Length: 248
Image (tube, rainbow, N blue to C red; front, side, top):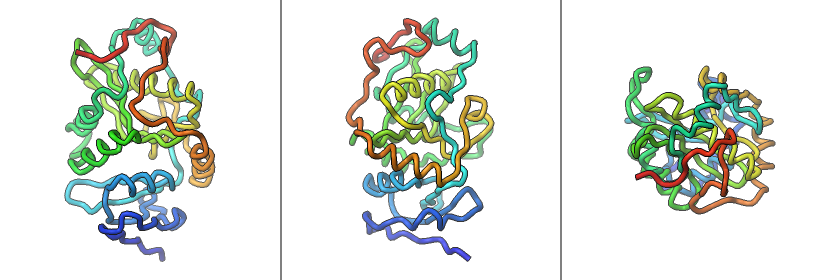
């Protein structure tokens, strides 16, 4: 029987156990404890591992099998969404309100009892953002943040963490802008971690952990795009002339 590895809170560079030691259920639990230092978080993502835990729990580290991802061309954009994109109904920005997007994702939802995006998680990922390792896409309506998505980017891999909407299709608009820009930049995949009906309808596929790690190793050999991101000049998914730039 496999036993979970307890990580030392004070050993930032402590290696993770091999991901093939992850439990089959639930969802590939691999290790417990440690901290959310930028060094440990980056090491986790480089090895196909991510933190996911609730308030009052120790940090839990996961490596699921199968893994949900979007590969280039996978995202399904409905006719309704495509029309919304072409009309430019929402202002879409990148890396202008990272912490606000995280807090929007952490806000209570009708279908959830609580959130796994703890204050410690917000602080840790905001630190990654300042270091050019985490990024957000923001969707604005009349100057107010109405949705978005955030995640971690390392070389040619983007690890999506969470997204939310306060107006119709805001998160879909955010992920469409993000994925089409990622593919144009040569990213290999957008990691969704665990599949769900919403992601499946958008076109997410499941691949084995073995295939995921193979793709991850390849993605990590490509140049890293750090710093604060900006949309490419003239970029707009759907071919429309939507509004861009910082919202008021």
